Amino acid sequence: MSQTYPSPRFSSFRAIFALILREMTTTYGRSPGGYIWAVVEPVAGIAVFAVVFGYIFDSPPLGSSFALFFATGLLPLMLYQNVAGKVGMAIKFSMPLLAYPRVKYTDTIIARWLLTVLTYILVTVIIVAGLIAFEDIDVSLDFIAIGMALLMAGLLGLGVGLFNSFMMSMFPIYQTVWAVVNRPMFIVSGVLYLIDPLPVFYRDLLLLNPICHVVMKMREGVFVVYDAVYVSTTYVFFFAGAPAVIGLILLHRYHNDILEN
Image 1 (cartoon, rainbow, N blue to C red):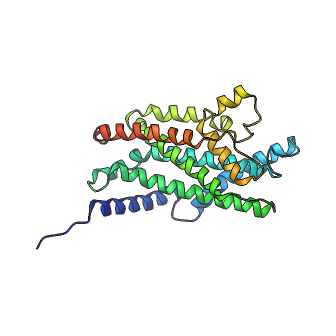
Image 2 (image 1 turned 135 degrees about the vertical axis):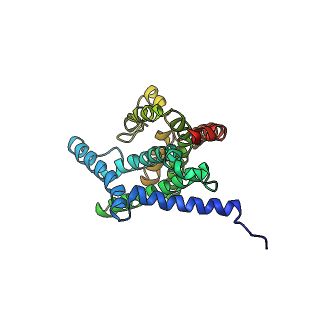
Image 3 (image 1 turned 60 degrees about the horizontal axis):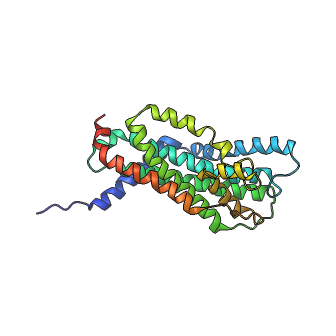
């Protein structure tokens, strides 16, 4: 009697699901406390900036809530940074499991991307909805714009993460370089201010950063009075696609070398 085996597609699905469960356990633990920290960390940052800027200025650049203004900048930035970081470390993190023939390096990347994106989308929903309810803010949300902003952040993080995955696996020093490069992102991504009213030279310079477009798109979805005229989704998707293609080509070419090392 011939023995039947699961199709490669089904085997990949099972591997991804198992990797997601493993990631959930190792990252957030078996108790709800780990997931609570995923919410507490951005809330703490938002609260600090809201108190400091609320003391210095009479009103935020948009709306009436400093906390909501900073949340619309910080949350998409955190989504991008965590996706890029998690995907970048996916192969190194799951190296022992890649010895099994049914676990592919692409499975580890997909699993980490899915879990991180879903986690931070949920965190965004909880924080934004919580701020609106807690401060009794009268808003008219554009869910299409908000969804587009989160999609842009998630895909940009995936594209950069794929390139990072190769670089971090082949060159350990790159992880330190990446951490240093990312430090000023908080300042140059428009989290604390609006880019639109800046002088043309500085505005155009900052718009070279694709995260600025993501932040502006997010604010367009939350603040009905804000028209994000400088947002280019095409620009963001290009910066997501270019490193993704390069990263996939390099990983396909050198993944055996990475596993042997």
